[in-house]
Length: 291
Image (cartoon, rainbow, N blue to C red; front, top):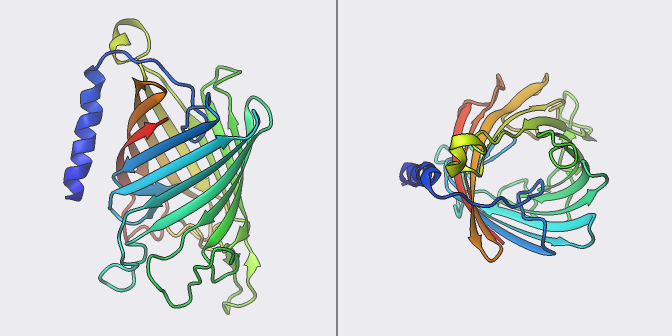
């Protein structure tokens, strides 16, 4: 069933390349159209990967997003994901996150035309009761399931017409603790992730105008100091390049402010440790409805 879903989405994506030309809709860093006060998006993805990390195994996930523009510079939002699985562990009783759910609240402040400050509050409660895990929403301690991520995001594609973007992201609070050799004395680790991206629109000119609207975006992301082990599928003792990928997106304008992006994303996790469970190479296919 999982393979069938992936293949269907894959076929739909590439079949869409022969459709008629569509208009492009400006989007912000979360993929939401930015010409409305309230924006809503629903994603269906073949599996959930975050920065090269596989959460919820090889299961289809549903991901809603709601954003509200408070001022031209300040946006508040909510994002969630679930694969509707009720088992926390796989049948071996040791491998975690068969069932995965997450609910995030975030704020985005546009500092300049190319720089944003983003603050994300991650809440990833276990789908079932697990010994030693406290699912309370306001528990940011070392047994909780909350973390706060402070991000500076650069995007030079608008004002500077350079399709380059960069992310610097640091966990500033919550369950991101490192310990001494005896497993005691927890300290905030401030785990930091950096990412470089580039977007290309290869079919927007010349005789390939009939498939205008395709964007290809390579990305390179690395964890700098994973001493707390927050990134489960990254190296602990050195810089770990966990997110090397390329994403192709085709967007359709359905009219009345509704768009339907489809994408296919290949990700390679270059970590040398902790990738035995789910492997190093992933293919994710997805479709969205955005308003």
